[in-house]
Image (cartoon, rainbow, N blue to C red; front, side, top):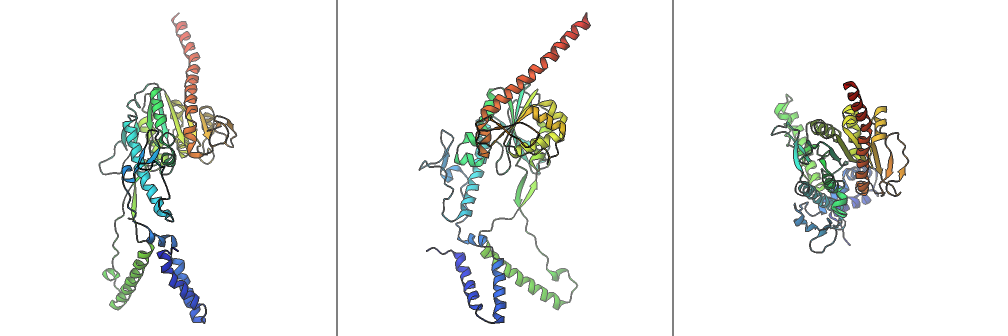
Length: 416
């Protein structure tokens, strides 16, 4: 039978408690003290001592995985899909391994955006200094100059980055369902310019500098005897803390601090920044948004902050299982009316694709994405979204024709 190291550490304490409980009042005080000690021990953290080192490869080849011709992640030697439980009973280690692979996947998708989709990586803020934290977005060559159509893609919250819908789908299903690449390629084929937002890249992480606590003896006017007593207590406390930390977290990871990116410190800020510096400056007459999950909330916030500009430039918005809420976000009546006319939300549902789904909120129509899995809603509604955009563009064009005819007639009448 396997007995973990943490159990061996705790075993003497449990035995002592059992022996003490048979004693008198003095022994009960010791029991209380031992119980207090046990309450301070984090068993989950203690289990880290049994883990192998958190040292993982930094390439797909190092993990012995590769994407096949169908865009599926497979083991190079066995051809099997990714296995999460690589080591039994070591969930935290398996999770860290999964996260390490996820970081490699993110870089891999970035490469595909540039090499396969021919997008350009654009650093933001646009006026950033050399030393300040930066993020980036991706754009097609004609994103700002295409006079007709521009498509903007916004993913949801979490670990996903530019070009992804869901990391889980990329690893366990395929690139088509988990990335925005099919949207980008079809958009380019149909004459759209493309901008891919990166709303979760809000900060960079740097190692936290070590703080040196000044000894009380250095700056105190207290008597020498009292200072010595306090220093002795302080040293004993530090010694106990270090001893406990050794067992609590033998694989202690570096303490990091976050440096937020100027004007891009949240998905909402990021959406507004990209609108002001790129989308609003584009030549396109028709701008289309595809926003998944929290990306929908970011779009609604953008509309609240830039209502007139969005209404004048955006033709249609496709939301996929959006988590926006017009009441909580305090979207005004005019915004809700515009969303009813120009937005559609493909939600997770067991109903067939495009089947109308009842909504509790007075905003945009809701239809089924043809799947009850949240992360799959963008991929499953893919053909319907492009059809929706085509119809919206045609409707806008036809609604302008009568006005143009009247204007032409008025010019001829004035000439006469």
